[in-house]
Length: 212
Image 1 (cartoon, rainbow, N blue to C red):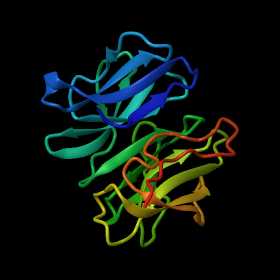
Image 2: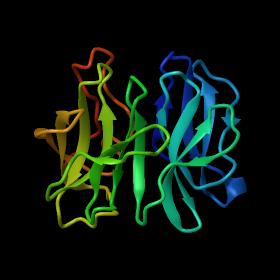
Image 3: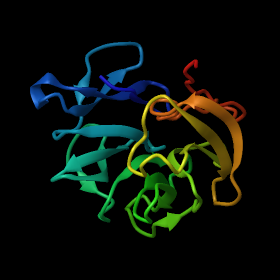
């Protein structure tokens, strides 16, 4: 199992990615009723790591490794055709829809370090939002659409790695780009803020920190 889980905007369904014994232990995306019930498989191929759900409830976005490359994909919630949204060399990860559905925010190593980007829902018009000495992962958009929060690893961490048990920053910046400010310095890393964790009123953020 892993730590990828996203609640639908209507609050009725949970999407998860979980390792499947029938797929050589690869991560597969499923949906399950929030009140419990039988999980329904969504992605046919793995590994597939879930990150985002569209506001209209129709699509899931996730990172998939296909032919050795990690890219961002979209698929209908009920399953169906997998659509590849990124094609650049290197790791693209952490896709999440903006609340208005106009953008997909994600992190990419295409510039040489891991930075925050956004693109149109069809994968067009990629736009780099951060460009600094950190390796920035997992942007999450506030419910009011005004802010993104993300995790920043120091430069001594490989751009394509997000290890456990590291001192990292949680940073906040305007959703359209701008100066980022530190809101927490924690001992965490992988799993600290992988999935959407804003409060509905956009005033609080939940995260995981390890004690050291």
